[in-house]
Structures are given as structure tokens and as C-alpha cells.
Length: 113
Image (tube, rainbow, N blue to C red; front, side, top):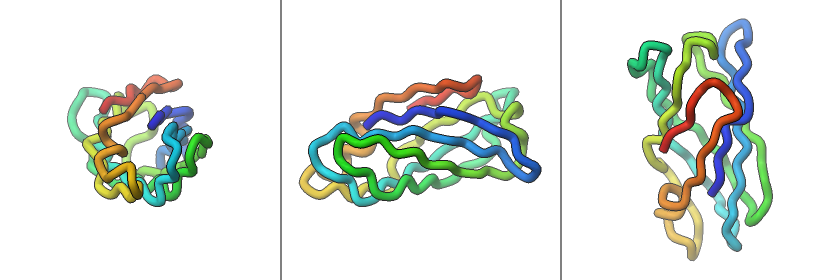
């Protein structure tokens, strides 16, 4: 599973985070929900939240956007994927959502796992 934080845009009410996610397995993942920890600029935990990436077809990229209230995007230093809250992956097993992560960020916000 490849997850890229592709963009971070401050809106009037939130920080809009855009992720490019690709299920690199031969089997569809019918639901993937990750627990995310957002850290502010000084490194303190800002909030914990769940991001539901939904259905991820095999070997196809998808873009998902999430809006988080609180600080502007400039106020975030990093995002930690704390684990998979839900992973429905058929014969691949539930652990596949957390054990095969490739993470990267195209923004100033680091993506960790």
C-alpha cells in the first residue's frame, strides 16, 4: 500500500489534506480506515482522527481528501499513521493495511508510519 500526502491547502475553516493512495496488491481492499495523529508545529499532538479511504481497487491509484479543523496547514508539522482501525481486505487479511505501507509526502508536512 502506497500512501502519499500529495497536497495541503488551508481553507477558510480547515486544512484540506489530499492523499494519493495505491493498493499495490492483486486483490481489492473494500475498506481501509486509518487512525491519524496530527502534530502541531512545536511537535505536540494536535488531534487524533480517523481517515476513511474507502474502497481501494487492486493496482489502481485513488485520491482522497480530508478536512481537519484546527490549525492552518502551516500549523501542522507531521502526520503519524497510528495504525489501521478497519481493514477489509478479503484473502489478504486485515493486517495488510498496516504492514505493507510505503509513505511519502510532497508537502512540508512529514508523513510517518
